[in-house]
Image (cartoon, rainbow, N blue to C red; front, side, top):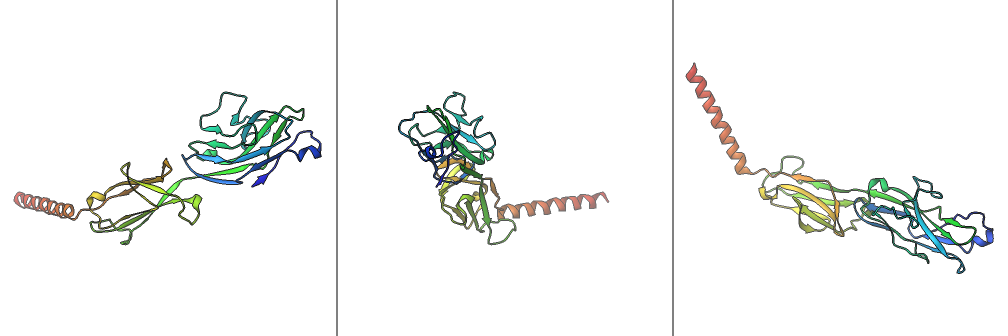
Length: 241
């Protein structure tokens, strides 16, 4: 937990009555999920909070523009202040995007002449994509009937640990849950487009892995057709000669 506060023209002993806590200094979230930046603040009981703001480091964290300002009605629906004017200053970002990456800071204004207070340390958000790793026991050769394929959904926010819970989709339809999808003794019915998402945020979709299972019957049929065409062409050439 990080505590910090910037004060403007305020006596040093007065500062000790003002604290702002960022409960997570670094936060990681999957693209298109929702994330909460937990925050709490404290000030003397004789003061009244008149407005609250959240800023991002790409802008001026003291003067704005702010991504949320309680004094304004024009705020993106993706940004939601879920705190209050007492002690909770938590902030929620919906459907996070890669350009949301960066440091976020809280600012509040009281009815005192000293005015505006900003927690300069902030919380830093990192946004990542889900990824799928594919393992084929037969190597990289064409997938055929009877082969096996293992696919693992990864959230890099977890590090080396598979902490997240995932839902797997085939052609957009949910098929199972868990970090790894095992496809064994495959047939042509396993062909399709596979994706995964966080179970708690179905909009957090990974990239598509296309599986194409080569059917032996189809292969044999293709060979027969090719041979037949070759014989017809050879016969036609012989007749012409």
